[in-house]
Length: 147
Image (tube, rainbow, N blue to C red; front, side, top):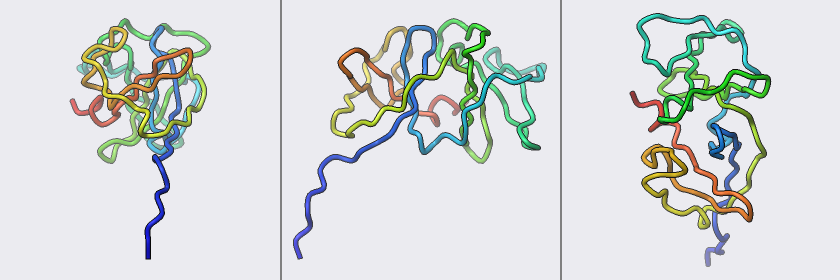
């Protein structure tokens, strides 16, 4: 029996902005996306940790993704969103400036990430995807949350 070639894998990414940088996370990694909710500040944490929130009985650590990636802090505003992901059996909220579209991408069109993507550290990215108008950094959630 001959195996049929199915072509490149099709991936879906939720895209979002950190300042002017457009980034994406594999949609399968996202538990939910919610509006900015009240975060309780926690002392002694790294400067990128905004605090914790109670999400339906679950404690979620919220980090400022801009600051974590070495950019300026996320500006507080009505478009902010928390992207809730799970990493190492813990739920983490990634605070971003705003949410954009869902991107459907073919895996063979994702290119290696340069060392620096629009001011972002390339080490946090699995690659970049070029559209007609944008360059989207594909974020590696596990690498971002290692520390």
